[in-house]
Length: 246
Length: 90
Image (cartoon, rainbow over all chains, first blue to last red; front, side):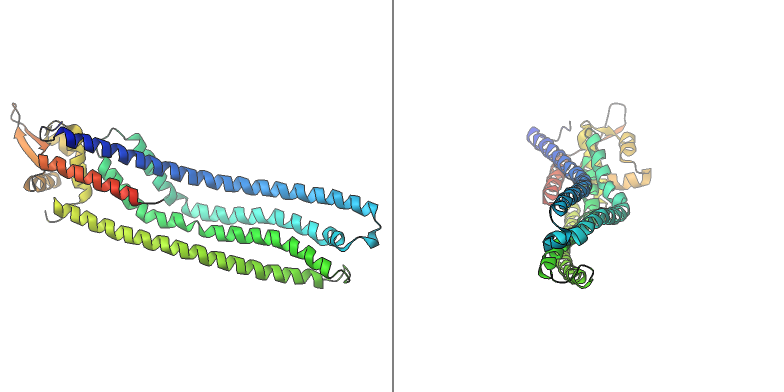
């Protein structure tokens, strides 16, 4: 070791270097968990899809049982509505929702995969080069990359608004349908009017929920971006100051 | 040199610190990965700012090592990097 360095300084440097490596390890874990989290969301949708089918089948069998017990013309309105509208709607939405989400997420992911994986690759590289010399430079470059890439990673949160809105439609539509069906029990099933009323209500509610969530998420995103911009500005300034201080 | 690149300066400090013993110029140049004129510019800059010292070994080769100021600067550099990392939220 350099003859000029004293043991206290060396000890301190080594401890900071270890701390830097453990921080980078934490970053790596966070990103890895984020990636795994996306797989979990995917698995969640598959589960939801299967649950919806199971739910529909159970209802179908229970309805058949009720129908056989009661005369078809005297079935209570909720059961009639369930039989005619609720079940097909539930199945239709449970099939279409995951497909739409899968396609939209896939498009978004394919657009972001390269840049997002840049960070994971850089951190993986850092994990494997522990004993190599240029740790500071690698970390500085990584920080610089992070500042550039993090806004894109954060933008993924905007997708959450869409997911919640579709979930909202999925839950609200059959619920309102059966509720309106109970209110309009005197209207014959052949009439399309009671079907369109809940449809319009659900579209309005979902649109409202989606716009509200989108607004909230976008506001949060803009805040994050401005925070990162400020961090970037400070980072560049501190780099200049550091060089001047040498 | 008017404005050195901090990343390159950090590379010099990293290598010289990790290597420990005074290094031959050629070895240092290979590790920092700069062409000779550029390497000499940076070395001059580091010498001017008292971050490195050059001594001749028994064979007459010039060897570069971190000065006390160089080690302290490296200490400040890693401290600053650690603080930066603590302030970034993923």
